[in-house]
Structure formats: structure tokens, C-alpha cells
Image (cartoon, rainbow, N blue to C red; front, side, top):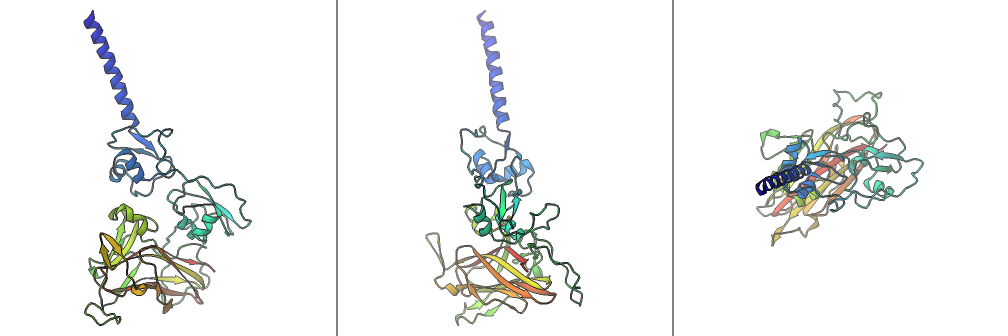
Length: 381
């Protein structure tokens, strides 16, 4: 009789354990993406890697997931956190209090993958204006489904099926004669640069492996005496250029060097002075245009205890806008931080214009590095 009881108890214990293991296995199989989540934060939460999550869910772009998406969690050793017991790592920004929109304003519903910068470019307004109109304290934190007031917009919000992409290809250059006056003007707020955020691939000009130039762009550089000194090292050297995805940057540097999307351009030279130009030919109709270029000058004169020491000479790094045969003069930038530069110009007749940014690092620094990202050209009048 005792042996029968022991057998029954053994079976019952096995069934309970099996049910418990099954419940745990099921609990750690999937996870529903919440507002504010990123693959990196989800991987940290479950003790796995971004690469493993990406492979398990066939995600081509690690920066593009959406609220409500069901993810398979590979190799998780514990059940997912319970929402009522564990606070989310990155809770969604609270909805802004009700605001009476201006009579000339419009509203826009944030879509997966949107940023305030892309939305601002699309509507022809500034990031700061949208942030102020919607009480957004952190301009890097918006979420899909959020309803934004677009200040000063005189048209209805764009429709997904009708709005041109953020970086549409530039129109083809003319074949000898300027475009006909009947050519339609570019859509208001459209970025006229091809591959303006440098997400669209790269090529090797002249088969030089040290140069990875974004598709749609031209690259020029100087070699020879700089004119800023007479020492043997006072010569321009050919820089190295890389189109870097976020996966090739340390996590703590990704937000510094990437302004938008998943890639940035790095032009640099160790212990050498550099002077170069990143250019593009764009066909423009008469009007006034705003050219915006984001740069991060990572100039380092020396390293002390692993920390970067920036040059004391503010002219060590300079930039200038190039528009045809004109543009702007050389201007100084803040080293070791993001700089958003703007240049406005007017075209009086239809023509193809070569425009871009000139960059120079005058001295043979320990590191003469420049990160370039999220450039736009928008017709404003």
C-alpha cells in the first residue's frame, strides 16, 4: 500500500514540475514591445544580446521595432518581468496636456521610426518649435501613436501614401538647357539631397579602399603645404573616410556621433592635417533654400588617463558651406559636441548647383576626426 502511495505521489510531483517548467518556458518565449522600448534595452532586460534578438525575429534594422510587436526571446534564463512589479526601463513620455492648436497649425501622429528631426524637416519647421508646442522635454523621446501639434504649418499633415520620402533622389541634371519653367516646384519641406542622412550605401572613389564615400556624394581633398606653419608636419594629408553603422561604435558614443538613422560618416586622420569637401550636384528652381549640416568635431590634441583633451586653439577645426562658386566663410565649431549648422541662399534661375560642406583641421593633431550626419536641403520660398 505504501509503495502505491509513493508511486502516486511521484507521478503527481512529476506532473506539477512538468507544468511548472512548461509555464516558465512559455513565459520566456515571447515579449510584446512597449512604448519607449529598444532592442538594446530588451536584450539587457532578458540577459541576451541584440544580435540574438535580431536573428531570432528576422529584424533587418535593429533600430526599427514598433509598439505591439511580438518578439521571440532566445535563450532567456528567467521569466520576463511583470509590468506591475518591475518598472519599465524606458517608460513612454506622458501625453502632453491638451493644447489649443493655432489656427494655422496641423497635427501629426508619430509613426514607427519617426524622429522629431525627420518630422521637422517634413513640415519645414524646427525641432525646437515642435518640442515647445508639445511640451516635450527630451527631443529624443517620442513614441508611435503620439499626436503632435505642428506649429506654423499651413497645410494638413502628410499622408503616408502621398508624402515624398525624407531623402528623395535629386532630379537628373539638365542636358544643356535649364529646366522648363513649367517644371513643378519641389514639395514643401522635402529634403532635396540624395542620401542626405548617409543611410543609402557607399562606394570607393578611384578604388581607394581607405575612402568610403556615401552614394550620391562627391569627395575632394587637398594635399601639400597648409600655409599655417613651416614645420614638416604642416601639410595636408588625404583623410580616411568611413560610413559607420551603430554596431561599429561603442554604445556610449552612438548617440554622440549618430544624429539620425543608423549610420554616420567619419572623416579622420591621426597625426595629420586634413582639408576636404563633401559635395553633391542638385538641380534647383528659382527660390530660397535652407541647407542644414550636422557635424561632431572629434578633435583630440592628446589623451590623458584615457580622457580626450580638445585643442585649445578654436581655429584648429573649421567648416564652411559651399554653394556653387560661393557659400559661407570659414566658421569655428565647438569641439567634442554636436553642432547644427545652417546656411540660407537664393537661386534666381533654374540651374544645377554643386553644394556641400568644406572641412579643415589645420594641425597634425593626435586625432583629427569629424563625424557628419543628417544633412538636408529644403526650399523655404
